[in-house]
Length: 639
Image 1 (cartoon, rainbow, N blue to C red):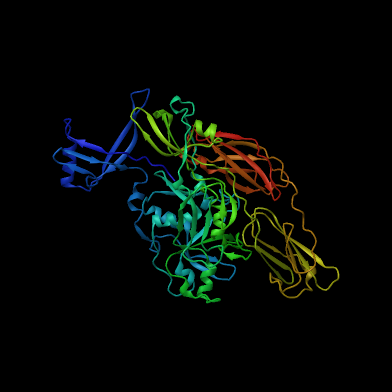
Image 2 (cartoon, rainbow, N blue to C red):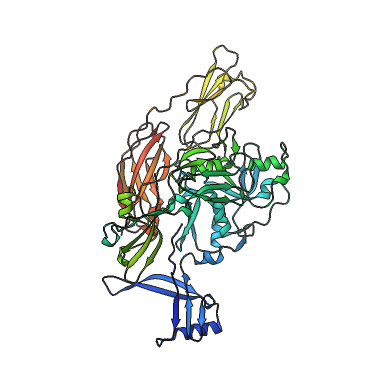
C-alpha cells in the first residue's frame, strides 16, 4: 500500500571517461563481492544552485554483469529505503513461543459452549514482536486494532481485542502438552491479516497497519492547469485487474457464514477468465473445531488439522475477555467468533476497493463503498523539487475534475526525467466515502437470580442505550413489568431492586421452555414467551440537533489536537470527522454522547508540521445523526 521509488533501466560504470569506477567495482568483486554498495541520486532546485537527495539505491557486484573486454559493469540498483530490511528478512522464520516472544496466558472465554482458552497471544503483540525482529526500534501504530471505535465501520471496534492461537491449542485447550512451537514469517503474518483487508507501511520509525481505506492518500499536486497536461483526457480500463470472481476461504469451516464465499461482478465489465482466490492459513470457525473434536453429529476430530492458526475476536467486560457471540448475515443462528466469518468480514471490511461498485456476495446484490482504481491514464507534467511531489498523494487532473465527477488520480507508475518532466500512469476509481451500515442486533443472556437480582449481559457492546422489559407472572392477575437499561458502550447490568418479587421461585434464563419473562430490545420484541409486557421507554424519534464545535487547538508542539463542543439533547454518541490538508473528510472515531471533548493523537506526529487539520462532528442516536457541525481548523505543530 506504499509507492516505492525504483530505478528504471540500467546503469553502466566504465573507465572510458578517465574515471576509475570499473576498476573500483572489479576490485570489490575480487575481494568482497557481497559488500552492499550505496548509490545516491540528487535533484537540483529549479531556482537555486542547491541539490537534494532524490533517490538512494544499493547493489552488490553479483547483481550486475561485467564486460572485462570493454571494462564496463552494468547494474539495475534496488531501492535503499525504509523497506529494505523487510525485503531482506520478510521470509525469516520466527518461533513466537520462544522467551522474549509476545506475552500470552490471556484467558478468553466463549459463551456457548463454556470453554476457556488461555494459550492465546494478543495479535498486536505478535505484530510488534515480528516487526521488531526486522526493525528493533520500530514503533507499532494501528487505529484499526487499537481504537475503541472502529475507523472503518464507525461502530464499536469488534477487532480491538484480537488474539492469535495455534490451532492445536484451540482443539485441546486443557491438554497437558500445549504447543511450544509457533513458526511464523513476517510475510505470512501480513498475508494472514488480509482477511480483515489490512495492509502496512513503514516510514523508518513507525510501522503502521491499517485497513485498505486508510491508505488512500492525501491531496498532492494539481496539474489540471498545466498546458502540457491539458487535453490529455484519455483513459482505458485495466481489465486484468477486474476479475469476474473473488473467492475467499479459510483452512477449515463448517458454518455457512465461515465456509468459502464468492463475490461476483457483471461479466460484461470484467475479465471472465480471471478469478482471484484468497485462501488463508487461518481458521476462525471455532464452533466447527469444537464440534469436530467432540464428535458432534457426524463430525470427527480428523476433519481439523493441527497445523495453522486461529484468530479470535473478543470484547472486554469486567476485566475478562469473551469471544463475540452473535449472528452474521447468512444465518439466523448465532455462532462464536462471528465477526471473523466471511459473511461478516465481506459485508463490513471488504466493502472498499472492490472491482465494481455493484456485485453479489453469495448471490445477494450489494452496493460497495469504493472501487479499486482501474481507469488508467497516461499524462505528462512538469514537477520541480519545491512542488513537494509525493507519489503516495493523489493528483488533481483535468480528466478527473471535468470528466470523472471529481475523481482523483492515484500514481501507479511515474517516470521522472532529468529536465523535470514526469510521465505519469494514473489510476482512477469511484468512492462514495460512506461507511457501511452495521446491524445493531445483540444476542441477549438474562439470568434472574432470586430473590432480588437480575443479571443482563449482551454479547457485545452497543452504541445506543439498550432497554429490556421483564414480565413477571407470579400468579397474581396483575402481571408486573420490570425495566432494565444497559447504557451505551456497556455489556453488563446487575439490577438488585426486586424485593417485591420474592415470591417467585426458580432461575429464569434464555431458555424458550421457561415462562415468566419477555424481552424487548430498543422497542423490538425479541422474545415473547408470555403476554406482552408493555412498551419500554421510547427511543428518540428524531436525531439530535446539530452540535457546535467550540474550537480546535494544541497546547504545545507535538501535543494532541484538542476539540470541544456542546451536547445536544438525546445524543447517545458523536461521530468525529477529520480532513488533512484540504483532503476528504474521514470518520476517525465515535465517542459516547456524554463526552464534550476529544483529543486527536495524530497531532503528536512529526510528519505534520505546518499541516492544517480541519474537523467537524455529528451528534447521533438510534434515530440517526444530525447535520454536520461547523468546521474548526488548526495548523498542527506550528512553532
